[in-house]
Image (tube, rainbow, N blue to C red):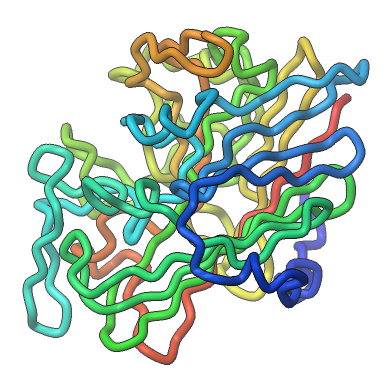
Length: 359
């Protein structure tokens, strides 16, 4: 099972940001538009509203293309969205317990948009703002940029944020998220909140998909989905996906479905670590995910309730799965979790690599 890890340095070489080829694309343009990347039979579409991934077209084993990402037909759908379909979420993805944290002796109160807690950066997190287009080459990459201000949703300091989506070869998608605090230490934890269904976005549930998660531990949560601070083994529990099995095989043993942070096996360092493998038997599509982050949130769209999406498709419970690589949820309130605090002069760097094949 052991394979040579992907070199993080090597991925950076592939994913290096190219200089602007068109100066008109580099200015702070706040017009909402869509941007398509395509190469061969592989294409992905984005909008600068929320830096959202709106579609991803993949061939199946017979060459038939389908859109495997849940979403909406127009930007208006994303403006009114409560599901975070395809969004780049932050400044701190996932939950902050009690919507507050202490940093250097000062108490910061964040927007309590999830009961008494903060979820995905607050009521107007990064998934609900207009990003400027920094760089765009249709056959290669698109880079979005956002300037987050001091006090936004309660978070300290000014921060510049960039996300680059890049095609690598004919079957890989790279995602590079960068953030730089300008004047104050601040927590940063960005995540890509794409909902995947490898059969097709409008094909029903993902319970027959097989998944392998290369993560032997989880961070358990309370009834409000706030981590308890423990780190426990998945062995003997419904959370054990160390070997591939169907998502639906033990989901009935859980209250609602999967929505938990997994601790990715291996040491966080200079290499990307293989995190997950998802496959769908009818189409033969397969997706591998690699990252440099310590955790991944596995979510089975438990809260979807007849959301009308692309082409009139009605997305119900379990219609898609999310694999959000990330720092651990509520790390700002658990000293035993990897820190998410980034200081001025430092750079937050988060890399994801998706590899798509058909068998």
